[in-house]
Image (cartoon, rainbow, N blue to C red; front, side):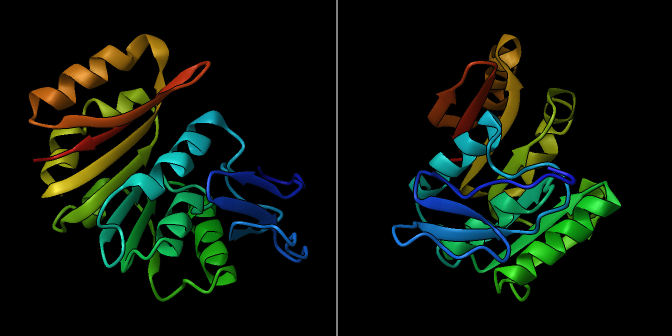
Length: 198
């Protein structure tokens, strides 16, 4: 969404608002985003699918969350709004990490959303109740073992950014690692899967 202005819109329980705009009277859970920043205002089908599925995840209040490829931090902020205790928002891009930190502060979540500029290895020694990864298929597949290992037993993985032609590869790879599909969204071009690690 770099450099572009967007109008308030709603997805599921959330209302995405440009910083500085008054909230609509019938708004849902507000997420404020700066007018300039990294990819991810919520209007892309992969982000929208994640925002729809997030409130369906049991045990989110008080949980530890990883948001890999955080972009603007919209999913990290949404998790925080739903009660996550801590969110590690990791992105390779320095401008994305900066945008995420700024947006977390706009939402009063700077104490719970930690923006990290780096690779997955930056948080590899931690474990999480929920792993969010709205990223490319060529990252989701090679990192599958690590992402599952970093998810606590009984926890969840929310994976998106999966082109429709690759969805069976993702399902096969993650179920082979012991995960089970809890929910999914199949969009026009991409698939999103909510997986449980028993």
